[in-house]
Image 1 (cartoon, rainbow, N blue to C red):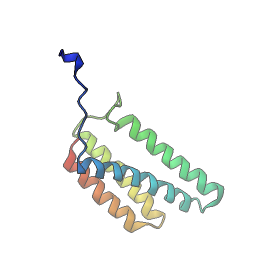
Image 2: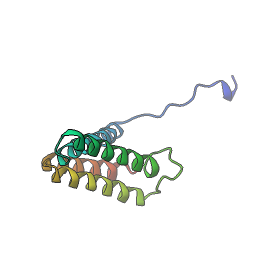
Image 3: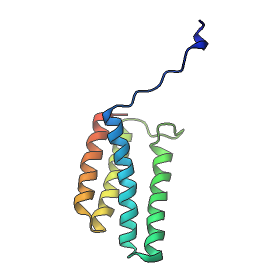
Image 4: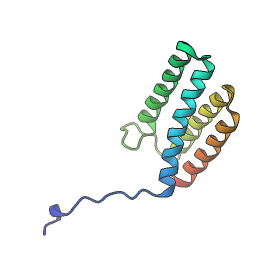
Length: 117
């Protein structure tokens, strides 16, 4: 059996990886709900919700995604992630969801610090 006959190695996903992904999804949900609330519903709320989520996806994909060619290196990546979650938290608090926003920032920054990916 040659080396090329082996099955490719799969990366293990641990608890912190799942928690980090959950925080990323929660940030998108909080941005959408915040946009809707800050836009006071209707078409303005929908446009703001979509715009905030699209901006966040673009930002994350450009500078924080693991396969991005322009990914920020460590330790700066930890600061950029923390800033991202802090901005999401501030928007969430301004929209009237301070408890959820604070919880997201606390958990997401703690997980990012522990993972150091």
